[in-house]
Amino acid sequence: MSTLPVRVRFAPSPTGYLHVGGARTALFNWLYARNRGGKFILRIEDTDEARNTPEAMAAIFDGLRWLGLDWDEGPEIGGERGPYFQSQRKSIYDDYLARLTAAGRTYEDGGAVRFKFSRQPINVPDLVCGDVQFAATEEPDMTVRRPDGSYIFHFCNVVDDIEMGITHVIRGEDHLSNTWKHTDLFHAFGKHPPRYAHIPLILNPSGSKMSKRDEGAAVSSYIQDGYLPDAVFNYLCLLGWTPRAEKEKLDRAALITLFEVSDVHSANARFDMEKLKWFNAQYLREMSPDELLAAATPFLKTAGISTDASFAAAALQSVKEKVSLLTEFPGWVHFFFREDFPFEADAVTKLKSKPENKVLLEAAAAHFSTFADWSEHGIHKAIEEVAALQSVKPGVLMPLLRFALSGQTRGPGVTTIANLAGK
Ligand code: GLU
Image (cartoon, rainbow, N blue to C red; front, side, top):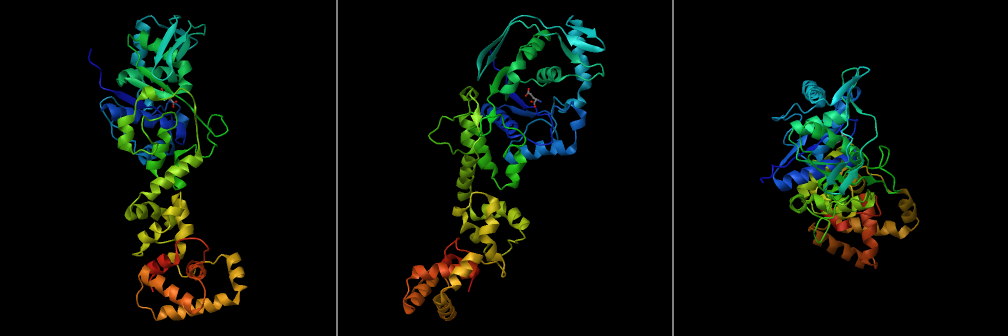
């Protein structure tokens, strides 16, 4: 028996934002397609016309692109099984409804069209949840077309999966309870249902289902808050899946190779923002100076800082060990880029209360002006000399000088700052 080439899809309904659970569903589908050399299809389930706004679509496309989840067929790129918006597929649904009617599986009821359930027990084999048995239903037959001519979700979803040749349906566990309806429809059309994999929900730290209001629910919030796509990608993979590897921090190529849908857990996954932040910090640390400059520049611009200076990349590098999010950079490096940076007020009061600080700073300024070697090493030597002349430890002088140059009691060392800022 030859196995069909894998075709999976992400089928979001536009709601105005891309939920982190949806993004993780898309990600697992994408990993599966890439692992199997198959196709990842994007289909927009936009039958609710009120929600069909360009903004709602953009939230989906932008979020997927930011995460690097490129689709092989779908909106904006097309494909052989389009259109990829349900709102443009009505004639296909009409055609499929006619087939159901010809098979004697529909009837009219007050202007609506209902699908006659088979009323047999239905088994749904699931790659994550195992075999799920549904007893013969006692529910009323399902409306598939409303009196206004529009089709309901279950009908469009199944017709599209047939028409688009979907081999595996990987989606949120919230759809498992309806899958018997889908299976019944597949059989009524004379088709084998695809393989199902219902993946666990993502819970917020308090254990309830993550809702729109929860921190981190929208993918756009990661973009705004200074997360790196590679870190979010890696972290989302771990929500419900434990890769068979020694470590959790894994790059895309490794995650593609390791992904196995049957390794996804059936227990719900809990979202942990601190862990995501930790991942982000690790990914930041690995970036080259140029990569970091490119990633941080928009955040510095927003803070009114231009990164044109030749030392900008080095300035960012000098603080990257202290930073977890791109949004934190302006607060650490602003003094490199402006003359009128503010001084921490408490520290000013404290330092001014000791007159010897003024003497030390003046001595350092005088000594530095005669000093030719402005390498980090040279600066260090100059500081040691001033300290010796003033009979203090270099460790006393250094934080004082750093404060004078940056207005901050934390940050890179004074030799780094002085060297980068130039004599
Ligand atoms: N439009 C459905 C949703 O967003 C898709 C369900 C499915 O993947 O089959 O939940």
